[in-house]
Length: 141
Ligand code: 5GP
Image 1 (cartoon, rainbow, N blue to C red):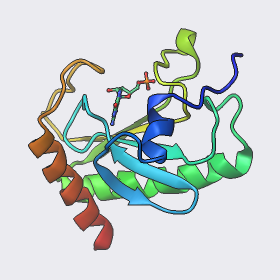
Image 2: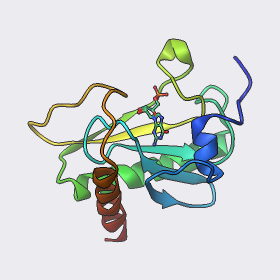
Image 3: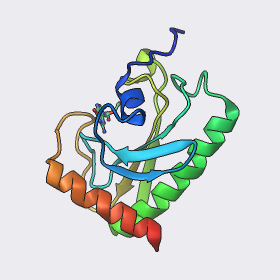
Image 4: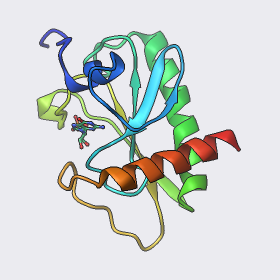
């Protein structure tokens, strides 16, 4: 497996070198919106510590990430009147991974609403800002 690349997009978001619509942050994890969402509220949850994916992540970081994944998935149901959620994660290029910093997709699913294709349509910044706010509000409930 290749080494972790400190200059991947999500490492830059963690360092504040690239912007993101953040919805939650603690000492070990960060959640922000995917810029090409498959559904409203499609979030990415990442560890702050470097790892490529589930194949090399420290178990403590994986546990921290999963706790945040659960929190964001629950908030997604509330914020978007969703009935379900997809939690998805890819490992290495052959496993469908494009950005090589560990991340979990959390995608709220509403009955009757089709998923958009993966990483295909860039969402308007104003829509992302509004959806991030909805998720942050649901996290306060
Ligand atoms: P994966 O590695 O899980 O296959 O895909 C990476 C995901 O990151 C895609 O869903 C894509 O839309 C998202 N993505 C790519 N570049 C950026 C970016 O600069 N900011 C954010 N927030 N998401 C990104």
